[in-house]
Amino acid sequence: MISKINDADIEEIVKIESDLFGNSAWNKEQFLYEMNENPFSFIYVLKKNEIVKGYIDLWITYDTAQIANLGVAREEWRKGYATKLMQYAIGAAIHEQCENITLEVRVSNEKAISLYEKFGFIRINIRKHYYENGEDAYLMMKPIGGMTDDDITGN
Ligand SMILES: CC(C)(COP(=O)(O)OP(=O)(O)OC[C@H]1O[C@@H](n2cnc3c(N)ncnc32)[C@H](O)[C@@H]1OP(=O)(O)O)[C@@H](O)C(=O)NCCC(=O)NCCS
Image 1: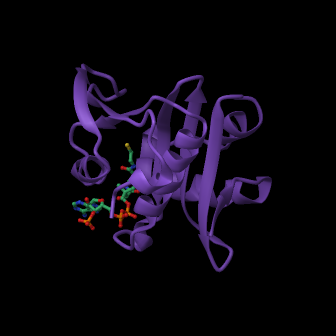
Image 2: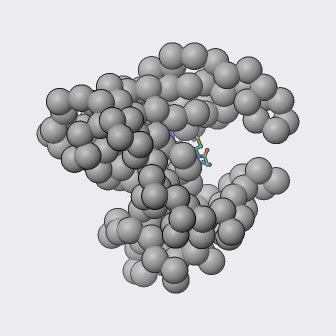
C-alpha cells in the first residue's frame, strides 16, 4: 500500500499537490528533481486500488531527517492515511539511524500541527516570514535517536 514513488505516479501526485497547495504547490519538475536528482530525497506514495491517495517526501541528510512535503487527497482526509505515511517515513529515518526528524509547517495549519504533535513533534522555533505570502513557519522536531519501530506513535 505504501511504496517508493515511480514515474507513473507523478501526474496523480502533481494533481493532488496543486489542489492542496495552490500557488505554492510543487510542480512536476520539482517532483522529478526530488525523484531523480536529489540524492537525499525519498518519496513514498500511499495507494488504494492502484490510485494515489497521498505522498510524503523525506530528506535524509546523514544523521538528520526532514519531512519536506506531505499531502493527502482532499476527498480522502481523516481516514488515517497521513498517519500511515508519517509512520512509514519515521520508520525509514529510524532505519537510517537518524538522530532527529524535523519539519516546517505554516503556523495556521492546525490539522498538520495536530498530526505532528500526535507523533511527538515539538515546536522548537518560529521562522519569521518563511512562506512566500509572509506567513511564519513553526520548526518542529522529534528526537528519534535509538528508537525502534515499536516506539513509533501516532495512533
Ligand atoms: C494534514 C493532512 C496531511 C492530514 O491528512 P489525513 O490523512 O486527513 O490525516 P489522518 O487522517 O491521518 O489524521 C491524523 C491526525 O491529523 C490531525 N487532523 C487531521 N485532520 C484534522 C482536522 N480536520 N482537524 C484537526 N486535526 C486534524 C489529527 O490530529 C488527526 O488525528 P485524530 O484523527 O486522532 O484526531 C491533510 O489534511 C492534508 O493533506 N492537508 C493539506 C496539505 C498539508 O497541510 N500538508 C502538510 C504540510 S506541512
